[in-house]
Image (tube, rainbow, N blue to C red; front, side, top):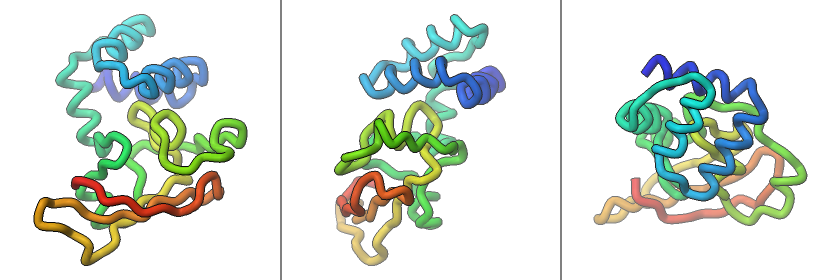
Length: 145
């Protein structure tokens, strides 16, 4: 897990590496592709390490949120950074993988908020999603928690 954390820190500070991760995540690449990329940069971790880190960071795909996000109603994961790019974010209508969230880093301008009292019997809950930079209008969506 230490190698995974070190890889995350390197990615935060290496725009070229982050661009490769963004591309892999946007294409829905399997963990083995990310593990190979990490190895190319001198980091070794297993698919289990990768999945554990995803869970720790919220591990969500578009439309999925961790329970901590629900309670905090603040959105984002443990790892955030300013990923706002007016050229990439302009004209968005919804959260798009690779823009607001990529790999294990969420944009610190992205917010998700659980609308209390909207839980269904099947476990779905309504969330409001917004961008503090105004990249897309606030929208609501029912998501599986």
